[in-house]
Amino acid sequence: MMLCFEDPAKLKTKKIVFEDAYVARDSGTLEQLKELSSKRRLIEESINESSFITDAIAREISGGLTSPCEQDLQKLEQYLPLLENLVVHYDLVSNNRQMVVWTTELKIRWTSALSGSSFFNLLGPKYFQIDSLRFELCMTLFLYGAILRERALEVLSADLVQSASIFRKAAGVYQYLAHDVIPSLRAALTAERPPESTIPVSTIMSLICLAEAQAVTIRKAEEKGNTGGLLAKLHYGVVQFLDEATGILYSMNGEYKEISSRFLDFISSCKALHEFRSQRYLAEGLRIAGQVGVAVGVLQYALVIVKQKVPGEESWRVAFRKEIDDADDMLRKYEHENEFVWREKIPTVDELPLLEGKKIVNFIPYHPQRWERALVFNI
Image 1 (cartoon, helix red, strand yellow):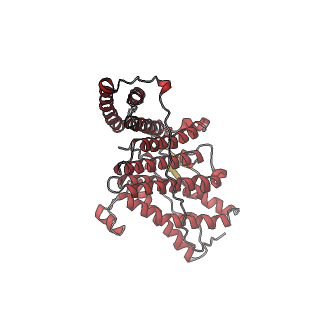
Image 2: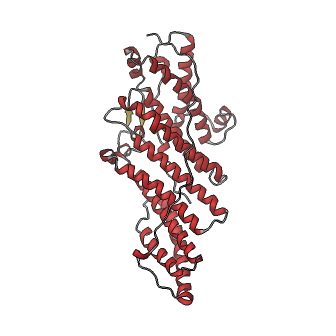
Image 3: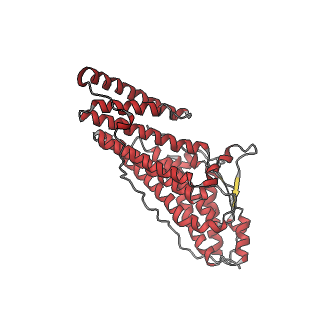
């Protein structure tokens, strides 16, 4: 069982009408601006939950896609190439003051799903406004990666290979965001900005997606009957991805305090769960190798630690309880076997073997698509 955390996709945005802000010099440019607004409106209605169309109509519009995640991904994949094209043409005339004024008039506003302050606003969700098309590109890509994560979870029970691939694709989106989009956005960032528009958070999201991809890959390895030793290393590989993410979080200094506690709890809970699974498989491998006393020591220590780290979120607690119950049964069996058959000494904590990790997944690079259409503004 994987821990679910869908908050990153819970973004909201305010309406944008590109043709009301930018003055086109020709009819072709005007039509493209209208198309941009039209494609974005579909995204707005979906994430703001303001659409009144039925499921049947939504399925028909999308060409037969039944999954809301797939429908949203399609909308984003139709909007992003148009937005990338607008960003390129804006850059060509970005020194023109009129273009800067028109961009300000767009009033690009998004909420944050990962900001600690966003969940305690009695007046509704807090919107961050940054007058830059790259902010729009940044938040749209962040949303795209988040919905890819949701889609990966959606197909998990049916196709492990596809699920792992989608997680890796999401990791690639966040990697592109951190390395190619946000660095060029920095000049436009205000003192108050959503965590989603920062390099550390995008990098952390990429690492989380890689950890999730590896977790899915482990399930495939389990189905193939791989040994406890290998599975222990793979689970600890998940821990290593999350360790790296935690290190980045703590390096954020003051910005760390702006991150939602639920996001932090998710990372620490995932890390604790996979470290425990690694210890369980290590114990299994030790028993197979005839080191029953060491296996007992590993399980005893693992259970003491994991019981101190059971999260508060109920759905996450269920996953922990199942793992703990299974390990308790496993420990009783090993203790009985050691007491009546092997009579091996139980090592102290300092004598227990250290966990080793193995990372076997990498991100799938994101290659932005751009519809190369000429845009001419009346400047």
